[in-house]
Amino acid sequence: MQLGMQSLKNVEGLTFSKILGSGAKNGFSAIPNFGTYVLLCVWNKEKNAEDFFKENRFYPYFNGGM
Image (tube, rainbow, N blue to C red; front, top):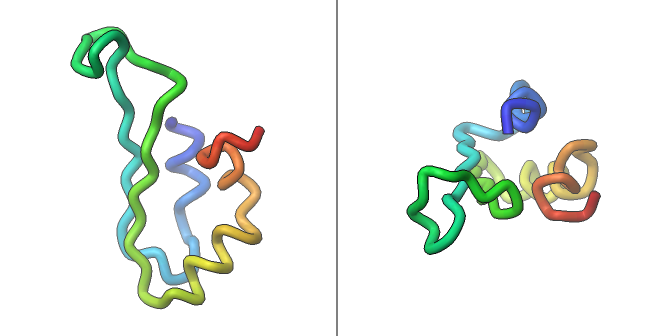
């Protein structure tokens, strides 16, 4: 998750971002679930978001693609 935060710095049009994790078992455990995350982003323009999803080299990790 820390590497993910670094990849979100200086992204054009991104005004806010947060990576949220979850706990194991029922979701509220102190033990982390490393397989489930949420990426929350707020963009200035829809075009900035579209460019991010297409071009950002770290996004596929958020999206479960790598």
